[in-house]
Length: 347
Image 1 (cartoon, rainbow, N blue to C red):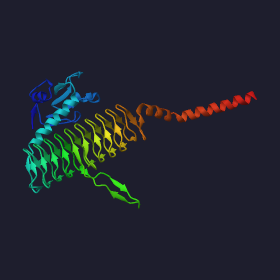
Image 2 (cartoon, rainbow, N blue to C red; image 1 turned 60 degrees about the vertical axis):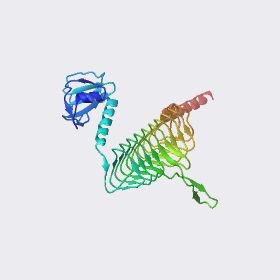
Image 3 (cartoon, helix red, strand yellow; image 1 turned 30 degrees about the horizontal axis):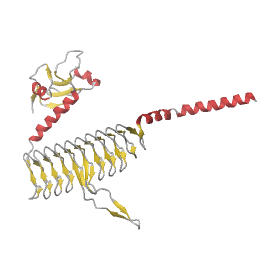
Image 4 (tube, rainbow, N blue to C red; image 1 turned 135 degrees about the vertical axis):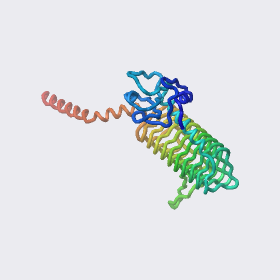
């Protein structure tokens, strides 16, 4: 697909500076782009490449100053990074619209229903009473269990497994290998030391505009629903346990784990490899640093780090003191020696 600079500027509400008819057909990094490609400059560290790149069109911040002449056509926008993300999304949307139809072989139950402009890839499985919305893409080797509901404009990448009764909203993206609705880790201790499985009869509900990375696992609720609210973004390799609630526009980085029945508020940020115990609450806007272990509820806006996690600012001060311990020990020994010397002189 080829687009002139003028059309690109229209899509991202930018202003063209240079040849508005120059066309591009692909994307490239500003330091590597070739003729016919589009690049962007958002980080000042890469400004030097603005004058040497071979890219035909470059998206830049409207405040970007030119220190020497350039050959490329510029598209000036308030935020180059955000505009480039918008453009990539539109490009991807156009490309995916061309992918429609049902490939063979695949299994689609007679009671399953799907909307218009749907793509269902080879070896996909759609169980009883499955419902798939309009413009949704189901890639090869996807499993949709009985009574699963998928909304409009959603993308389910290869190898995703969505167990029975789970619900996925509109404009959701779930990446390869993720499992939605597997059993929660529920076992009741018995008198003889064994464990009796507690049936997990709930489901998982994923609201609109959620993105879930590759090889994540979201367990079904024991009773009720494990809930991922609208706008949440989950990275790769994340474990969400039964009956957890993840709030609106919350982001969770890779390898984090959330234990059962924990309620995570809106706009929360959780770093990679963080661990969160069960049955606590993380208030709106709270922040958990990478590799932290959270064992107590957090009030809104609270930032924590460490294991066990505690106040972020206090932790940084403690780390600074810890780094100075060798020097402090040396000074303490010198003071002890001085005190002994003074005591000896007094005698």
